[in-house]
Image (cartoon, rainbow, N blue to C red; front, side):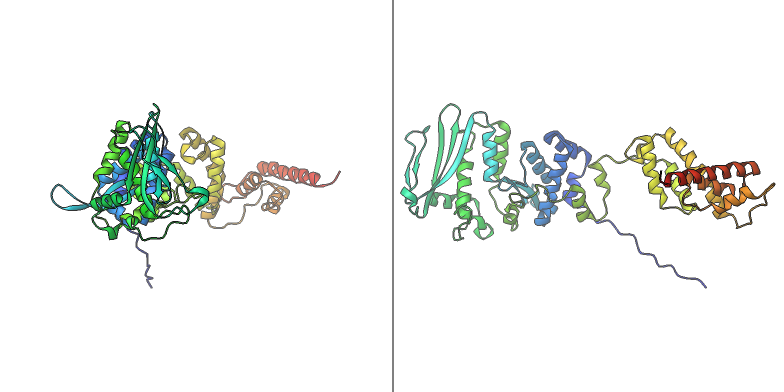
Length: 439
C-alpha cells in the first residue's frame, strides 16, 4: 500500500523594497565605510535607517536615488539619526521631471544637528537660541556685530507669554551675529512654507508646554527657525559642504507627506541604545529569509571543502551524527583557527584520514549482517578479555575503539594482536585502580 508523503512548500522570499535595493549593495556599503571610517559604523547607520522605516513605512517606498543621496549625506556630515533632535528622515511625495509624483527620502535637520554643523566651522566659537517673554528685559543689539541684552525677571517672577525669539553666533574674531523674530514673524514664516498646518502639528500653538523645559512645540520650531535662518553662509562663515547641505534643506519648502511629522519623532531617548537592532535582524524582519543582496554587506564566506560533507556522512553512517559538531571544534583547535572553513586543505586531508581510520570499523559493523565472532586460533583468554571489556567505561575511547575493531567480523584481529590488546586493557585498568586507591 502506497503512503502519500505530505511535504510543506518552501517559503518564498519576499520582494525587496526600494530601501533594501538601494543600500544593500557592495559599492554603496563601501562608500558609507569610507565616510564613517569603520564597517561597524556603516552597519549601525543602516540599522537605524531600517528602524525608522519600521516606524514610518513610507520610507520603504522612496526612490532609490533619493535613499542613497539622503543616507550618504548623513554619513558625509557624520550625523546620527538615532540621537534626538539631530537629523530626521522625512518621506515626501515630490513631483518628478515627467510630471508624475514619487515618494522621496529627504533630510530635515533638528536644532541639535544645526548646532553641531555650525560648531564645526573653525570661525565659530558658540551658538545658542532663546525665547523672550513679555516680562523679560530685552534690548536688541546696538550694532550688527554686538550681543543683545536679555535679562530674566527679578527673583523668579513670572515671565509671561512668549513674544519673540533670537539666535546668536559667537565668532572667533570677537564679533557676534544675531537674528531675532517676533511670534508674528514666525507665524508668517510657517504659513509661507507649510501649506497644510493640520499636517504639521509641531507648528500648532495650542498644545501644552513640554514638561522638560516649558516650551511648546511651536516655540521649539521657532528657535530652530531662527538658528537656521542665521546660518545662511553670508553672516556666519561655513564650509562649502555644510552650506550645500543646508541649502538642500532650505529648498524643501513643500510639505506634502501626511506621515512626515511621525518621522520627526525621535526614536531614541537619552539612555537608550543608539541602535535597537542589528542590520541582519532588520533584514530578517523585512525580507524573511536572508536575501541575496545581504551578501553584499559582508564578504560572502568561502564555500566549505567537499571533505566536510563526506566527514559528516561518515559520522551519520557510524551512528554518531551528534559527534560531528564536536569533531569540528576539535579540528579547529588542532589547526588553530576559529572556523572550519579556514582550515588549510593539507591539514584537512590529514584530519580526514584520521577520522576515517576511526569510523571505518563502526561503519562496516553497522552495514554488515550480524555474525558470530570467529573462533580464536589459539587460547581464549585474550578474546574473553576483549569481549568482557568492550564497553567498559573505565577504558579510554581510543582503547574501546581498538577493541571494536578487533572484534569486527570483517577484519578480525589475529591472536597476537588480541593478546597485545588484552595486555593494554589490563594495564589500563590496573593504572586506573591504582589512582583511585588512597595512599
